[in-house]
Image (tube, rainbow, N blue to C red; front, side, top):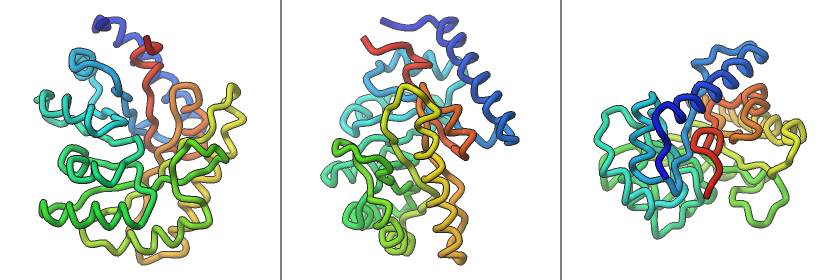
Length: 234
């Protein structure tokens, strides 16, 4: 079922107000935070309605699903984020489709993306995904392996590492998630101190519909919001 533009606009206004209040509490300009609408499982019609309401950043979990949508969205200025786990055999279309890949979690995957980006004569922007919880179902590099991944990935000529991403455990109380967000921020800050010659790592992709305000207070620059914008999944 399609959302009417007004109902989506109402949800968008509510989310933007929450972002603005969180930024005010943290003493940050609202322009520091990019809202990524998580459009996985959503039809093209819903994405077009979101674009009409002003959304320009969309997040998809699966490369194959995104490949059936992205070529049909002709609006200029739309940015596509791959926020789900990336399998090596989907790396080629991922490089072709997405402006930012959030989920690089191994040297092997980074090397493959670098080679493919080189074949397309481009630099692909990526985030390194860190496993900050103890959930076996979540992807990401372990915290004590992050430095090694960053050290190798940062010298690949066709990749641009711009920050970190994490998917903390889902906890009913957003305050309980705060330590995970703070941990990711500290890891980013530590990397910048250990590698002062590397370009800045401005991006922290963390926070979803139920906890993005806490994530913003802890330094998130990208929040990935689906349910609060599109409504509960059917």
